[in-house]
Image (cartoon, rainbow, N blue to C red):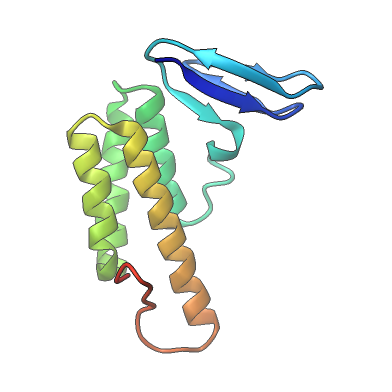
Length: 141
């Protein structure tokens, strides 16, 4: 079954090692095959990966785009170790990322890394509001 992607005018899409840029009209694409696919809004760069969780996402993203990237794997291990040492309550997110990678589900690992970014933002918001303790939500974060 083909993946259906709808692009807004001017929106970009990464397919494999290629960037597809939409024209000035909304477009629907059907993509068959097995290649990494990311929307522009889901792509981080070294410049936009400006927090520890975003740097973890970037390492996973690089692994997703190039599964043979040993450099990205090592960076991920180092970043995850440092993040866990600084934020022990993040272990469930890091475990999920690791489990998805170990099963070869790199796209799912990216989604798990997005949850880590959200958790990091929750922590930062919690600290900036002057409250003590670890924030919680309905999922037990």
